[in-house]
Amino acid sequence: MRLKVRSKGQKKSPFLFGGCLLLCLVLSAPYPVLHAEVRDRVAAFVDDIAITLSELEIRHAGTVKITPDVTKEEVLNTMLNRVLLLREAKKIRLEAPSEEELLRDYIDLKIRAFIRINEEEITDFYDKHIGDFGGKELDDVREDVENYLTENELNKRLKRHIDELREKACVNILL
Image (cartoon, rainbow, N blue to C red; front, side):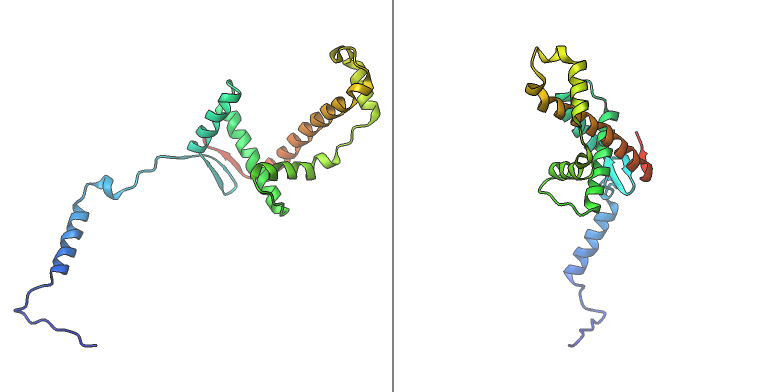
């Protein structure tokens, strides 16, 4: 390979001139063109996972359609709880086609599997709420009562589990 040495009388390359001109234009451009503006901010962190304000606003707008008086703080707490539960599901290497199914599988495996409603609890509930069953016999509503009691217990245990996860995690709300 031979290097071409230019003598003092030769003309400069048009590419070099064009490059210098482009550099001058870029450097003299107005500041906003060179600086990308941040339009979103972090609403909360769960350890190293951020929830942005735009994510919160999108989720809140969707939730308001179903539950009109839900606050942004309630939606944010739900989002934080979801992050914690999904992280735990991934730690135990659960897999599912969607996050919803992953959450359901995790809750079924870690909480629902340990709930047992005995016959006495079903009978006690039926006896205390007999008027709510419209004259139906216990045998006709046994499954409904058991499902109700199971879901009620699941909600209590899930809340305790989330509280434990929050205690172990670094949750920082920036709103």
